[in-house]
Length: 463
Image (cartoon, rainbow, N blue to C red; front, side):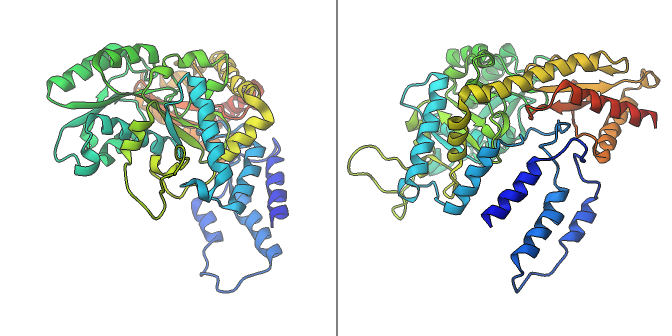
């Protein structure tokens, strides 16, 4: 089975430029392939795996395709996928050391590497998580433990806590507030200071002061390093100053851009991250790992431990000598895969500099793509990409003065391109306008592939 699975994966990795990025089938077409009764008897492996490849693999969206510039999900490094296969076969859980001796130690080591890149000392706490949503929830749970030390035991009981974040912050911040008892209305949204959604430090400071004047306890200020619309990075130094002046917990959602810590060239844009009290980082984005690979780090381990302080003698055990290696007491999740294993293997094989080179290439492509798009008469680029996400629009003269029609035109154009299989784009709203969006997650994507997508868009407009 392992050999056959590797063969299927190898054929997938050999995706050619002439193949479709996305299937031409509709959701209903795909659903029809799997419309069947529960199998009661097994079938021959050859038949099952043939159907697996024909019915499932063949209709999957090809992130490995160089004209896929869609969502913030990477075509993973092949070695990370190989580690995944081995880890799945071994199935060592990550709650306690005795369940996974090697992977637990590897997780501690990988966390130590990233804490070291930030510049933190050995007092930090951290754990791997399923993604930015759980990472941000965990960091904010530690922040709540500081603001309301008895909330873990007694609940919020109507007390008015809040977090302050940019209006453009990821939706998971609002979800975290709801789950932590702050309520969705416990998120104080601050209008961004620019079109790319960066959190303005002066507006953030005013929001913090206003919340306290209203009698609310501020749990945290949430900054973003790599926003979802444009991957823009907030001014972390200035926001850290705002928090330090007010004694407010500083949390950074670094899900997208945090992996740039590996790059000497890109790391300066994260200046100030070392002053955060906690941050979340998705490695299945800019470290090119499989979903789901992410981590959360908290400057003070005791704060993270307080967020999940609990007795579970059937699994958590005190160690007679030395500190505990168990990660379960610091994590929301009990059943966790050995996610750190694939990160460790990738770093061993390529080194931090090798992965950094891939990151730098995606950023360079985004910046070159902005110039290529701006050079075409009927396209405009409303922002200069700071990292690897680029927004743009098609603006034919016939829509001059009709903003609503222009928005609809770009939305339809995206759908037509994706349906054609030639390329894959996403879209978003930037400064109130509908835009097209390219996310460069494949280091093999170059400006020539961008030009091919633009050519396809112009052909669709002409049809």
